Length: 212
Figure 1 (tube, rainbow, N blue to C red):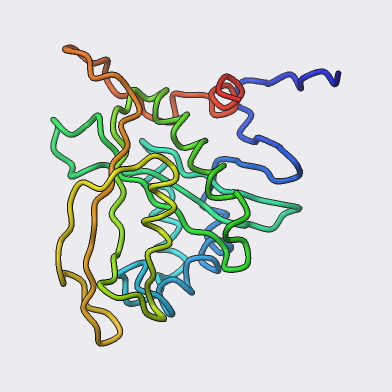
Figure 2: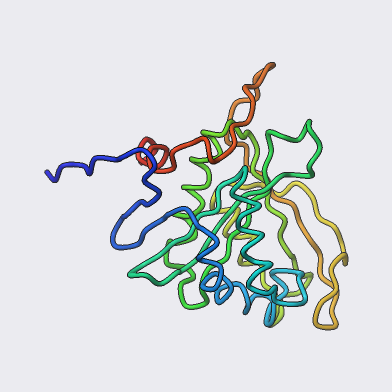
């Protein structure tokens, strides 16, 4: 039996079958924009109209990492996808919930990468004392070339349940789209929950190793 690799504190990479799940940095922004741009330009998966510039995208990564995980999947130096969380609503009482997002390179879908990214996100979120993960997802009344129900089905497969739908609230490509919220409870809701721990105070590798 092969011995497990010794994990050093501060190690930000997890290697499994040649695909690494690691913590993103602002230096990844260019590669991540390559993944995100087609979602903006060709789909209603994101309701954003314009592809953000490099500097703006770097700021988004840095802002997220101040408190939440921003993870990438990488193979041989090529970024395959990314996932991150952020505040849910933003009021103090919502602190134990987080909104989750995921984007995969077009040629890397349905290969298990999304599942691995979400498993890592969930492990980190539990370590942060997050209790609820929430996903805001575009939903077509009728599937078309811009939007299908694939994301809804993926989240359902990952254990999320439907909690609400807003009708005709997003307008893109000359069409109206619905938006749904899906939710996954990942922790016990104690009468006095422990405070949420900012992501920089945790060791990503130790968390993933513990949950592997």
